[in-house]
Image (cartoon, rainbow, N blue to C red; front, side, top):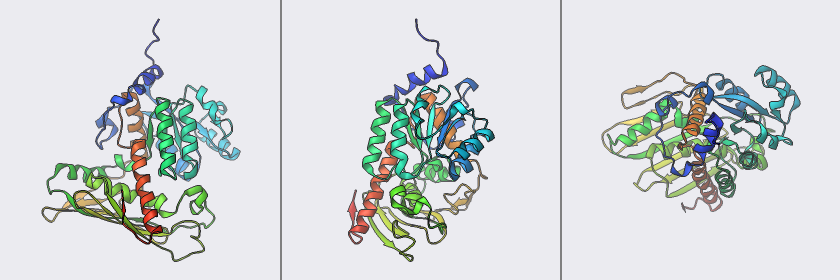
Length: 370
């Protein structure tokens, strides 16, 4: 006798058909799928209760329509107690890193969101996949191409989805630039300038430890510039040239401080990019081959509000909650059985570019083909 078509039975059916999924454009969750029914709302477990998880993701889950916070994973008992009470999470739905695999038996968790230091992304993505849970993993996807490939393999083997936390794929100003490029109204992009950096504080934090971060500013915020150049051109780079600079060799003894790099694209477009932990910069500029139109975003990547213009047209959509848009789209795509532009393969492409950038630096700014 067949099982009734409950939400979770439906999820099992849709994920097994992922090989036939379609790639979706950068649109809001409501544009893509409409809202889910209340009984289709998916449960998310946050793994790692640091500042981004509890300062951005957990509050965003109070605004989401398609998913909700149903479990927490932390190695800090004080955080378990504090956030369990704040978000009304029962003790049975709070895990530590030793008993994490027991989440496989929790029917209220559909998605595991990995928000740990970069070097832990692969382990917990694979463990979540083996537990039969869909995965969202924060960027960067992992600290090596090899780990990214292992994560993709594990998720496919367990018939679960893997998305990377590329929230700007759902942010309207960045979407507007993508849409303009796709329209071809001013021809193809010819020059992209992408910069993202800030002055990092505490010298003892995990982001400055290579064993945990896998790199410095490049892994943390430089990846946004790689993403911006790729989605602004709608092309994949064919070569990179990179240079590294350090003003504080003690603080940045273990990781990169400032990297400037160039990416070449098949159409002839060139992207000039900068990332740093030494000063604040945040912009995206795209110049097209026809006319004098130029797209500008500044600030371009943060979640405090993104603004800019397309030529004389202002791009100001207020400040929608990017994390809520992201998680709603990912939850809805799981139910619909479709694939977003934030897949594991997207994270893998960035990892290959990052490895090429570091290789160029190691070889005295050699041109590295991709």
